[in-house]
Length: 367
Image 1 (spheres, helix red, strand yellow):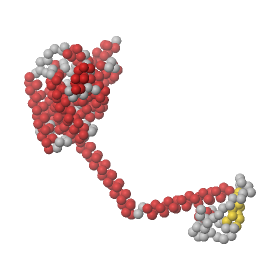
Image 2 (cartoon, one colour):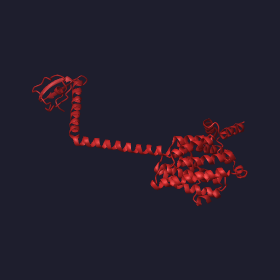
Image 3 (tube, one colour):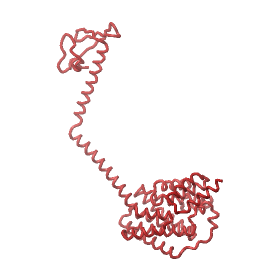
Image 4 (cartoon, one colour):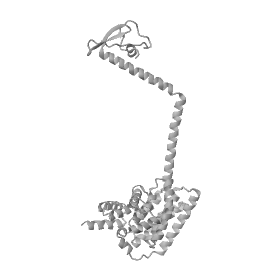
């Protein structure tokens, strides 16, 4: 310890021999207490003084703290030289720049994949307002003639319109397998099919042109996912060619992987693998084994997990993922969950009678 009295201004201690001015004289304390509760006798350079015991402890403790603080400050001042401070500021600035760069990249990817105008057209499709969707997409394509997302979305409007007209969007078709197999032969509209094929081909050409310049373009990769998925839906639900639909599904899977590598936040990409895994998992076990051997994905839980990702964080395909989760809930006899999902969809899309009919069916079954 170093001279406690002078260092902390507690007044002068009467002793023989003064302390040095820099508080550096050694202090030797001998506690020969005659009253342990009240006082202590201190031997200071041969001179004896009696002081209150609490004062001795206080002065000794505070001197320790001051010495420690002064030592820490000296070490800090010695270690933090100007070059070190400059280096610290450079590192901090570098970390900030890295954060900004990643944030800009994420925002750029997000804005490149999404379009409010096209999203509005998709919402009109879900509400069965197909002509309004076509008009909105036609206007958008005139302003963005080289963007593949416009014709791909227009193709979706033609497909959904046909599925609605033919009654193929009924959720019961997926819940009752026998009824789905025994449904009447569909008569597709030739003009609608031609327009669908025209828009799909146009979207493919534009997307491939973009990918030839930048193979990680998020929007073009998403369009390739859409065109494969829409083709699969058409041949499966309208033409009744399930094997051909599987080939489109498998071919589109590579674009899913590429899109998620380019933009992990593209949650719409999970819909296709989710549908494949879940719907194929419902097939008989022998067929599932054959499908797995031929490269199909048939895991039920994986399918539901992917559908939930699109349903919770997707953009264009979020409502469709929720409809499929409602179908899954009905298959699992989870009526309350199905009711909750369908109610949310009905409230968002009041002109789509599908949701109201399914809710009415649930109400009748509950009686």
